[in-house]
Amino acid sequence: MKILVVGSGGREHAIAWKIAQSPRAEKIYCAPGNAGIAEYAECVDISAMDFDGLAAFAKEKEIDLTVIGMDDPLVGGIVDVFEKEGLRVFGPRKNAAILEGSKAFSKDLMKKYQIPTAAYETFSDPDGALNYLETAKFPIVLKADGLALGKGVLICNTLEEAKEGVKTIMLDKKFGSAGNEMVIEEFMTGREVSVLSFVDGKTIKTMSSAQDHKRAGDGDTGLNTGGMGNFSPSPFYTKEIDAFCQKHIYQATVDAMAAEGRPFQGVIFFGLMLTEEGPKVLEYNARFGDPEAQVVLPRMKTDIVDVFEACIDGTLDQVDLQFEDNACVCVVLASDGYPVAYEKGYPIHGLEKFKDADGYYCFHAGTKFKDGEIVTNGGRVLGITALGKNLKEARANAYKAVDWVDFDNKYYRHDIGKAIDEAPEA
Image (cartoon, rainbow, N blue to C red; front, side, top):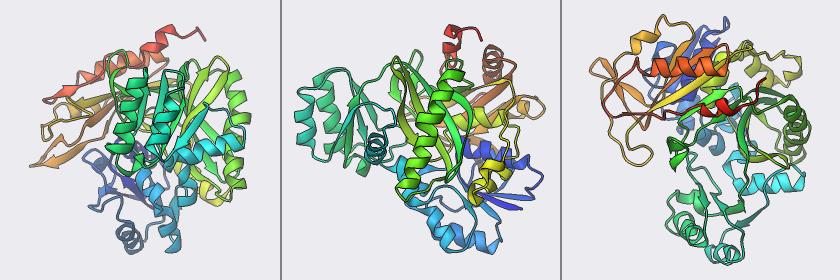
């Protein structure tokens, strides 16, 4: 098969790497790709948002399957464009990708179908939001309705902070049109867990659990980022919690989308909070997480191309989705100053050390080729990833590999996976 991956980050590198392991993959393309993805795929200089250009390329190269990695093209309707052209594509259609594209939609869906989530109100008028906050309980969470690169969520501890947050989101439009509407919801406490799943419209099969680290600084301080590291599985995600979620959250969401005439085919990412009252949904995403994909896919035993095809064909119930009984940790190497301001173009040294290192991976996020060498080209640069027989071993391996790579302005958190030290013994 000829397969095209759409995207350019660490998630797409992990997807391309996993596809390359399939005996069914004869040729892989990636648009636009990055310097790391180029090891497995031929990178094509077409923007992920150039739907017509991508579809024309897929027809010209007789692509058998296109895999959409990023949220923006999915929410924008790239799958609909490809299907209209008779092209085979993995990912939800526009009317299903709204599950991620609009937080107001997803919250209303959960309320209608009694899927556990935080109490909330939705506002399109800043004055209405400000009036509501006058009698609200703090801390409280403000969320821009649309896509904001994982950064459109503000946790406010006081009324003053919340008022400033409304100004940031709805008046100053820091997150652009994503802030035209805003969700204000109760602040939930507990452990966060991410669970990715494959869905074919009616059947859902979950992947192994993971846990992200959103804040830029050690100890969960600083600004929200796209993710500074991850580990899988979460020791806090027990069999009892899984059984509850399978019934009341996962299948319930798939059934709700089908009932709304928006059948979901692709990946649903469930962001969960394990509260004292039980698991509740923090958010949905309509694609693999980043860097969740980097820790979940190295543990996946099943041929990913078979799973993609089953999701498209509605035959996921026939797939035996399996994962290794091990653990994986990813530490993101970023450019100092991320997520606000940072410099690019620094040469990266030490990447060759991953070539023959079994169980160690370097997934490229923001890199490119310049004058024959690989240089930094983004806020998140690399995802240094390692397997281990358990989480502690995987974490030690990942931080060992962090020292293999160097570039000017290199920055990373030192406490990715530290929570595993507090986990109950399995």
